[in-house]
Length: 137
Image (cartoon, rainbow, N blue to C red; front, top):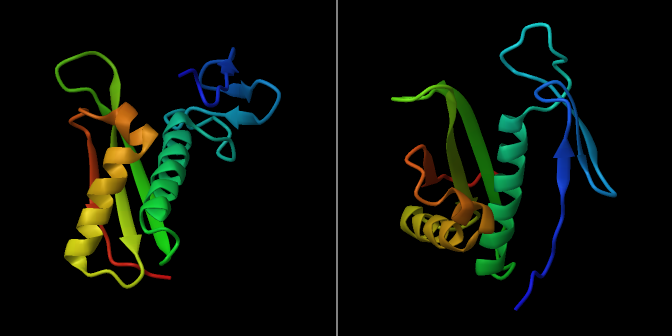
């Protein structure tokens, strides 16, 4: 079976400038480590957090079949890489659902993480975790 959907994005400016989705979104980008960069522009950390929180929550909602409200918050940190040159992301997703106890929320978080395409892309990364969180509506 072929691709169900395909998109393409291009960046020609590096950490400062623009990233563009073909035929769609144009996002101003900036380097969060550069104090002179545009603070109103987005950066890779924010875009990863946005993509993963959206995908993971859509997956959680599919699992609960819309029977309860869900929310996902993702935190992405930039760290010096351990044992190699450069940087690495440390990403944590917090999954919550209205009316579920701690164990049921943990099960939902694990199931959503197992099904979410962005989670699958991140699978195996030692700097990625998914945790249950109490729901606040």
